[in-house]
Length: 108
Image (cartoon, rainbow, N blue to C red; front, side, top):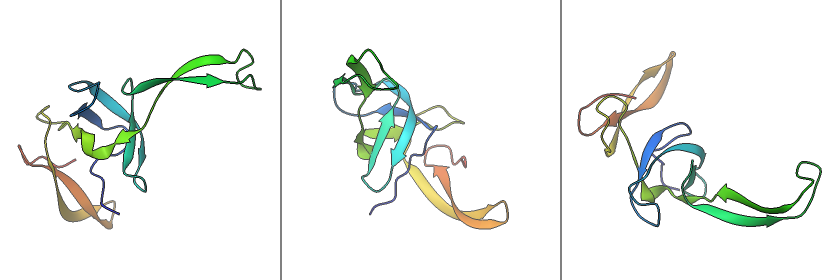
C-alpha cells in the first residue's frame, strides 16, 4: 500500500481526465484504495430510490472517487502545484513525517 501525499482539506489540481486543470479541495481521502474525492471533480449522476433522508428520490449528482495519482498538491506557501517530499520531525511531541514542498522547501 503506497503512501498518499494528499489529505482531507488539501488544495489540489487535477492532472488528467475530463476535469484536467481544475483546482479543487479534497473532501475525502481513501488510502486503502489509493483514491480521493474532490469537490466539483468527476461529478456523476446517480439514480436513488426514495428513503428517509431523500423522500423524493430521483437523479442526484455526486462526486466520484478519482485515483490519487491524478491529483497534485498545491503548496500553501508558494501557491504552485508541487511534488511532495517527506522529512522526519516532531509535531505536538510526537515523531512524525512532515510533508515538504519540493519547489520552495516549505513545510506543511
